[in-house]
Image (cartoon, rainbow, N blue to C red; front, side, top):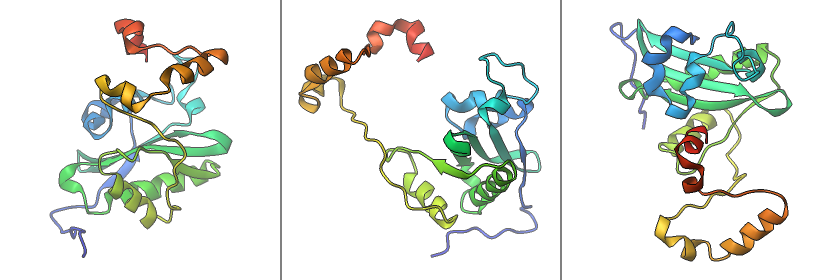
Length: 194
């Protein structure tokens, strides 16, 4: 079954360009709130955290149809001169038209030109639309995803059932010099920093 929507003269191909600060508000709905800081970075920005956008290896590209943002891809420098694909999203009415693939191809070309040795992505199996994301990467020739980490979640009142060895594990962590804090201990300011 072909779920691609054909392009017509009424639907021009999107143009892809680097994101600039003035795009941030229009592009914000296309990524998670925790990643929106990437949209406001400019290469000429003074480093607030001691790292410039170049140090972070940010590459943020957006697809536009005329002035309407229809897709966004965010990435940052990873280990060993690789680039991490951090986020990719296509606006709902524009899905199924190859825009995510266009963004991924453009990111790949730019990173190859920048000397990156590879691209990688990490995501949760709980990611909304995880199957579509995995399919996009497979179509683009990426290797099959593999589990590299596991995370446990449970309802607040059920932690004793879900994590019966909690006290023993916390003691082992503390013995190695690490501190574990609950969100309640952090308080509002600590949670905002977290």
